[in-house]
Amino acid sequence: MHLLYLDDSGSASNQNEDYFVLGGFSIYEAQANYFVQEMDKLAATINAADPHSIEFHASEIFRRHDLPWRTMKTKEEAQGVIKAVLNIFKRSYDTARAFACAVHKASFPGRDPVEVAFEDLCSRFDQYLDRLRAQGDRQRGIIILDETTYETILQRMAREFRTRGTRWGFVHNLAEVPLFADSRVSRRSPSCRSHCICGFQTL
Image (cartoon, rainbow, N blue to C red):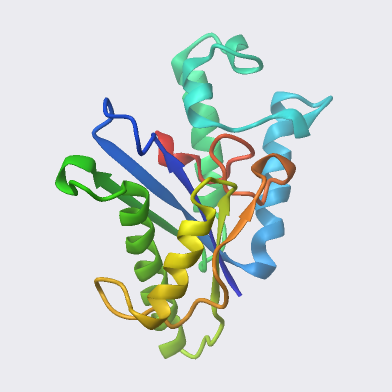
């Protein structure tokens, strides 16, 4: 099974923000533990006594207002943490892929940017799985997101993509409707507000 972890950056309803971004990464299920171990190692360099308390949220690291980030004296030091997170992804498996969709809100009047981005990424993930299938990899995919008020809407959309299709065609390779998890309980969780391993979304 290929797992696509997604999280958002920005607020869909905030009129002061021109863009809404939904993004993340996909990995093969057996390789998820690698990311957990590597993130724990990085966290231990920041707080050896309690590495599990470290939450890699890009905007908080850049602001350096709260512990442990406010102990960093320069912007470059904080950016080094974000680069270290990204390097975990960079040096990981060949099956790891980044996915992102930036929605310019004004270009989609009357449409919810969350739904626009979700449709785009469902289609792109399905096309990626199609390419793998053509190479002999018949594994399907599951999308995992942080808990959200959009849960019912996105699950309905995913079901409809199989029967009615997206703007780019039908979705065939998703094994189940999206799953939603509390990002605070696991480094496998996608949220950039918590134990993030896809923090590039908010850079």
